[in-house]
Length: 285
Length: 329
Image 1 (cartoon, chains in turn yellow, brown):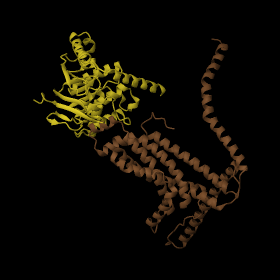
Image 2: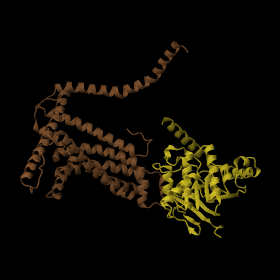
Image 3: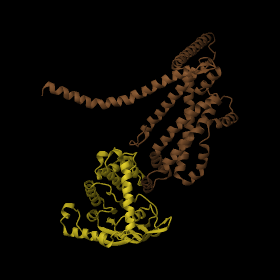
Image 4: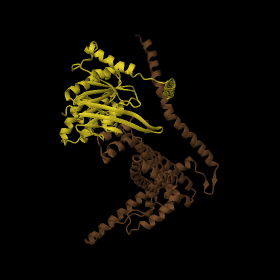
């Protein structure tokens, strides 16, 4: 029974108070997630993916509905719902080891000093970062930082691992490496994972189900696509797999046909201008 | 390859390597020297033409001579003090031989403090004032940075007292210290406490403001990390807030120490704390023909020490700040 309703989102809605009145960001989000499931949230920017993730993390409070994890309501952040942030957010004054150690020490399970050390080292090993344990975040590459960020989250032994576009800021090769690592870790530990992504291939490759969200305001779940590909999955073999391509196609169709982002001409111009403005600014800088 | 060919090549290489470094050397070392030389020239030129009731305004040579005199006076006084203690010891030893029950007392040397002892007093006083100010300013700054309400409540007071001159505080501080600090065996002299408190009152603000700004501008992601890790209030402050605002706090501390050193000289003049400020005041009152040159020595010393203190803070900032990418000048 616990397997069936590990994590439940029921009628979740979110309104933000703005200067122009309330903004309805999210409404009627219903999702039931099984233990060990890997869920991807995909959708255009501004569709409330991050809001969903932040509500599950407890960083936001849903204004309607709620989240239940193992029969307990979620209403504050906690280590059992560890978050891997988009830009790693490691503490810049602590080494990779110390960053992970801080998380381990904060997780209540009464480890001895020796056990803490072993657990930190084990998690760094898991993300292949043992060699850089004593390096400061500024001394390692973006991909390595994100690996340490994942190690920190895993070290909390979370029931649910929440990843907010974890590979968004990385180059394609590094991203592929990290995706492989995540698949490997997921196979080994069997955590429940919710991952936000913009990348269709990433979503299909990693997920058990892809949750596709409609555009905001009042965004909600549009479709849910179960991915029934055998694990372990190999990106090269899958490239020619017709089923894989069928899934890809389904997601692309949802994003670019059913939920194509329609911008008014004025909005489009504004964006262009702000882009130009930024470009000249950075040029001057 | 023949020799004739290689030699010009090497010359070329040398040119390529050494020209930029030579340029760097010139700009980094020669230009400051040029500046100083021009300054010394203008100074001696102008000094000759300024007549005061205490004689001509001292030029660089007169000031140099007086600085040597001050060193000599210091050494002489040291000698005197050494001999004074030696005589006491001999006397005490002699008395002990006569009377084994004699309790030895050692009297302190009571000669006037020398220039270097006055420098030491000034440094000690400014450090105490600065420490007191920092111990107050950092916690209050953290509070202001963490809580918008606390900031809104305290901000008017900061804005009100920040621009107040030390000279305005001093009479009040003097009276309060005289009234409150009453002891038969005072550990510190009143003039010292008055000066230190005045320094503290004036160098509180830059640290407080910079700390508040540093704390309130912590990366939101790091705050979220703290929330996910469920850090309690104390750990939140010590593990996230303090380390991430260390660069800003140090910027404030550096500004504070600079202001403190400036304020100290004025405070010592009026409070008669036996430091550099009192030295300047005493020489001014003394009014001998060397007084102006001796004051000028003090002026330059104050400048050099101020600069050294700033460099010291910079070195500490470099050591303790995790943000190695920041350009610190």
